[in-house]
Amino acid sequence: MKLYDSTLAPNPRRTRIFLAEKGVEYEKVEFNIPKGDNLDPDFLKISPRGLLPTLVLDDGTVLDESVAICRYFEETVPEPNLMGTDARSKALIEARQRHMEFDGLQGAADAFRNSYPGFARRGLGGSVGEVPAIPELADRGKASVARFFARLDEYLADHAYCAGDTFSIADITAFCAVDFATTAARIPFPEDKPNLKRWYDEVSARPSSSA
Amino acid sequence: MKLYDSTLAPNPRRTRIFLAEKGVEYEKVEFNIPKGDNLDPDFLKISPRGLLPTLVLDDGTVLDESVAICRYFEETVPEPNLMGTDARSKALIEARQRHMEFDGLQGAADAFRNSYPGFARRGLGGSVGEVPAIPELADRGKASVARFFARLDEYLADHAYCAGDTFSIADITAFCAVDFATTAARIPFPEDKPNLKRWYDEVSARPSSSA
Picture (cartoon, rainbow over the protein chains, first blue to last red):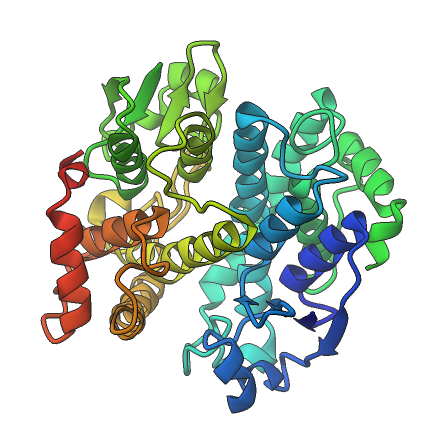
């Protein structure tokens, strides 16, 4: 199977880390998003929305959403479990994964995409045509990231991981959100948040973090 | 169990329709979001993000995300199946559900929340403090909804439903997105999209649509 990938983008990275945790091997095709590789007509025939990651399974099935790719491998390669073991834990992890995505990753993405000069006419990702960046949305995204850092630090005072006491997909999303916020979106890591720092260092030490 | 609900908001409605399809009964607590019921300190003790829907199970478990609530009931009340039956169909339905959410519902929500006068200082939902509305984001949301209508119409030329040939959670999200866009966000229903119209009429005729 083949993963259409982009090393620096946060959504492909979520998938790469998930697959590394599961020990799944695959072929990678590296795309440069600022150069517009993801908008190439040949790729749009495979993945019409023009977003990464896109995974093509050996049977030709196209999965074009990070969490949907993770779901496929959670079902086919159950260990280590990353999305819950029963109805309650599956629901709680899904809720927390979505908190990390909407509160953290979305804010970081808004902050970056609406301030990076190369995306001045690409305010939304993928094959949506010209969408002007909105500078106020970059500011809103930065404020969202600050709240995300504060809330996650508070949560991690009482929990080992982002969705309770086991490492899960919620940690992968949060980790990619923190890294994207502090690199691409240039928001300083909040050194005054000890629980966030403890968790971040721990997740950084996992071999999957370099995937 | 108790559902903290708001009749006119699209995310609680997704959950209500899903539960109606499953035949699950529950107690409802109706909140008025423009009046700020969801920001009441007593509710924030239950659901700190201040977002609806929030479901409290009989054992006290709090589920505060629409799709996570759906996941819980997909696991505990498997029929009718709404989220896939094997790894491939689960992944494909999850991908399509997310398309409907990010391409459709998010656009409609941006269009409404950044133009409705009552939310001029509440540009993001929930307990995030003052967030100014961004008029340009309302325009971006309207353009996203127009693309969503066009793409969904094209997809529905070849498929009975929003994620293939069976009714699923993707249809519920899309249906709530269309209704929210055409009522709250005041974007006209695209009468020139015959496939979208055929599907919309069919989903509207299901008893769950009035949940």
